[in-house]
Amino acid sequence: MEQGPIPSPHVLIFPAPGQGHVNAILKLAELLSLSGFKITFLNFHHIHERLLLHTDIEARFSKYHGFQFKTIPSFRLEQPRPADAVRKLLEEVEVKSRPIFKRMVIESNPAVNYIIGDGLMGFVYDVALELGIPAIQMHCISACSFWTVFSIPDVVAAHQLPIKGKEDMDRLITRVPGMESFLRCRDLPAGFCQVSDLSDPNLFILTNQIRQSQALIINSFEELEGPILSQIRTRYPKIYTIGPVHEHLKKKLRSIGKQESYSSSTDLFKVDKTCITWLDNQPPQSVLYVSFGSVTIMTREQLMEFWYGLVNSKKKFLWVIRPESVNNLGEILQELQEGEKKRGYIIKWAPQEEVLAHKAIGGFLTHSGWNSTLESIVAGVPMICWPYFGDQQVNSRFVSEVWNLGLDMKDVCDRRVVEKMVNDLMVDRREEFVRSTAKMAELARKSVSEGGSSSCCLNSLIDDMRVMIK
Ligand code: UDP
Image (cartoon, rainbow, N blue to C red; front, side, top):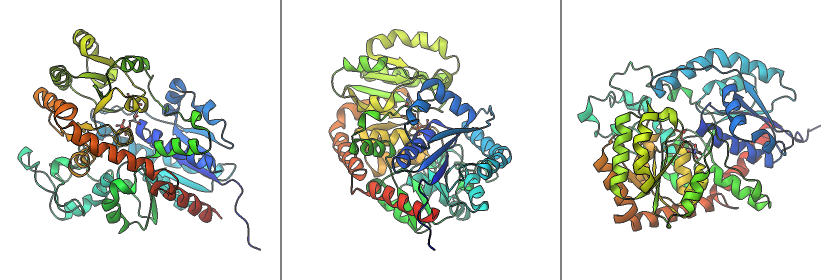
């Protein structure tokens, strides 16, 4: 006799330990909960502790039947360069977390029917395969970054790496299909693929986490990345583009009359909401929001270049400076506070989605992290990009060269360039950018509305998951 579907399939979801990863994957988890799946959301212990400290996350999710948070032991890795920290982390999780994770899945009650693993942690997918549980990787980076990372072995095979010094940085990389005419060495993921030596241990670290499979999930949308998604489809027959996932969740909750229960807050830092009152008192589109995400570390010199560039631009700014992002910040802050009173407002962590949606915001100086980029796109805010590492270099190239949503400062950090770009974005080329960002924001919102591309992808992901679980 044929069996009917399992009443409430149990899905285990496991994000990599980073702010951007937790933000995006938790929103997918909530979308799946709304569709009747039982969810176990597995976090590294230290990440969950921080969530508990800064949010009401457990109370918020208790309304979902069968939703539970679980943790897996974590370990601290002090590395001077974040890319080295990522490599060390991935090496450690392979050895330490993999066996614990496998035991957790085997012993789970109720049994795990489906696993969604972060695209940065290939071992999650491997364990699922080993145990015969259907699984998929969710990539929290853009399709264009994914495709670049995926293509790195071909770039190396074509002898387009290593990079031979600074004067080689503008050379075109022609072995990433679809990007032949504009992807330069300086647009490759920094810290990983911008190598001067092929024996660099970080070169293939990101590529090695990607698994060959029938399908994958990407937090992006067809109207933004269609041409690159077509390239990826030559290797992955089924791509579920369900993004921008934060807007998707917002729309979904609105459609069932529960919009007030949307919360962007999955913060690992203490949010300072006083900036909203400050923004309330500024003229429309007059403020540049400045934030470099949760990982970026800058030198004192770089901080001062930004500071002088911003002050000299004569534009108002709201600047997020995480205390651990600059050495000796205490001393520097005193220096900055005088100038700040006139033109700026500095905080340690912002309610970013709310800030970007505020009418006073006219631009975003960003590190081009993928969540920040999508949040800016949805809010229709043009960007100045100063990518720090990893996928951010590719994103910033697309923001300026392909999507025309802003300017790419890339690897330059000079007060005159900062000043000029701020003025270009906020004054001289404002109309052009406002037009293109408004258009893309509209497409983003349509994609997650009923019948839109991302909405259809989410429906088909849910249907396909149910079929595989049977
Ligand atoms: N974020 C925030 N407040 C801040 C800075 C960042 O809430 O002051 C959030 C932002 O909205 C985004 C995430 O942190 O969702 C950062 O993710 P992203 O992928 O942009 O960069 P990462 O921190 O992973 O480098």
